[in-house]
Length: 328
Image 1 (cartoon, rainbow, N blue to C red):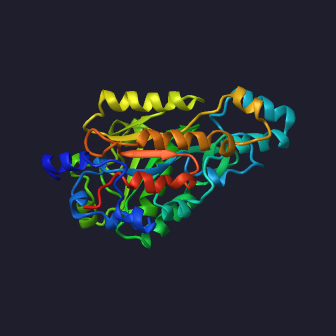
Image 2 (image 1 turned 30 degrees about the vertical axis):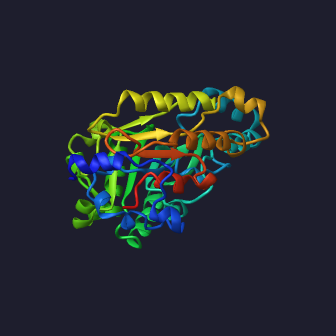
């Protein structure tokens, strides 16, 4: 754990200062290239780029409507069938890249939603429609980690649909079997620095937003270990204002902190642009305003931590988040 002086130094660095990784454009191993001082900082005190609905590249536009979808979506699909599914797909996909490609781009926080599915025992990623199986996605992440032994990925299971206690146990077992000794156990958040994780060969922190499951699982970090700010708006100025307001009020000292730089379309938004998609309508303006929000921000106990976005390849998002981490 770094002392207070180091954290204050980190606080003084804004978005304008480029990190080593930002200068080289190589983000596949950016954690291993951080300066020693930041490797001693708790992970909650450094800037970490993440993706929103990270799995959505894999959504299947021929699948049935997934649990958690509004009744309006279900009714639309029941009447218009495959045509409506294409529309749902266009507005549910938030990422153009696979897990591996996102990790290669520098993403280190993954936002996951899981559901059961009729007529199968497999668990699936979902957002409007069904995506790939959870097992296949976790194996893809684990294979990437095998090739990048000093990189750490924060995996946030924050929405569950139609899952029984037994289903949760199945998912936890998959996590344990696939990642094995890579999983970082629940610990004092102020000790969760890269140098500590490296010494123990831990590469995965698993947040699991289901307290009945985490209560006796030391390898899962419960929901009270992370705060995520969702602006819940279609308007970019409101998005920025809400992110600013929460940050200004002060972050909790004992949690990871997520700033969601996303716009959430309403039914009206979609109907007005029914032939378009989230990437063309919402993502560009959300990204432009998210990067405006990040200007002159700093890292540290009261600063920026995890920042997530849709279509993370846009506008050098990863580079600009990582530029908050000083190079010396």
